Length: 88
Image (tube, rainbow, N blue to C red):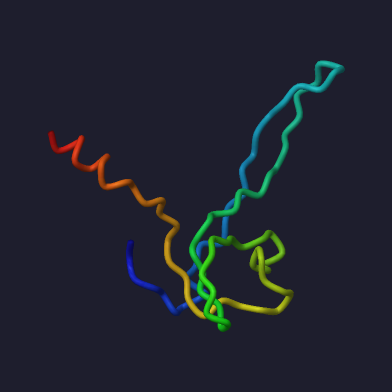
């Protein structure tokens, strides 16, 4: 894992995705969905957990107006046995 980043404004904001779908009437329509990007956050109360920015700018799992003190990219750890199998 990379180190903690204390510049909260640099944390990923998520993105919008546009997809098309067909209605029951056979019409093609577009849908715009918000796709959050998960990151690890550290809070002032010394908790660390995965979170993401909501479309309204608030952080998932935190109270309105509360900001984490640091963030890092979300990486899922790999079990050490998997690494040994890849090396063989």
